[in-house]
Amino acid sequence: MNAASFDFTAARFKHLNWKFRLRAFLDGKETITMEQAVSHRDCDLGKWLYETGIEKYKKYNEMHELEKIHESLHSLIKKIVDLKRKDENDQAEEEFKKVEGISKNIIGLLDIIEKKSISN
Image (cartoon, rainbow, N blue to C red; front, side, top):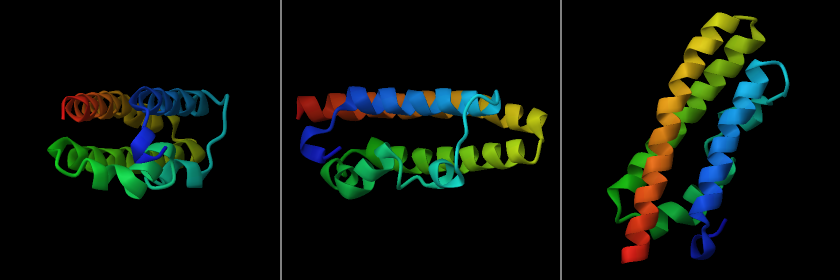
């Protein structure tokens, strides 16, 4: 995903897909490595953010908020994966409930940044 051709729709889709993967992981239907879970820089959205996105859209406050929230999401995912691996399933499920709100926030910020970039 480079800045010149960043596809906001694809970014939203990939982000939502992560949520589904995490749900499948909690249901025992998929595996997630710690590398996949914890790195807010190595996922597709993180790569775009740190390679070109932050620089290109730095004039938008929402971009800086997106960076912080995205990082906090990965911290939460790490916690969920840790809990699941320790067989602390109830706690993992409780933490997973927080993902929805963070996810909506990320999608909303992507929407705002996209609209602002189109109108400028």
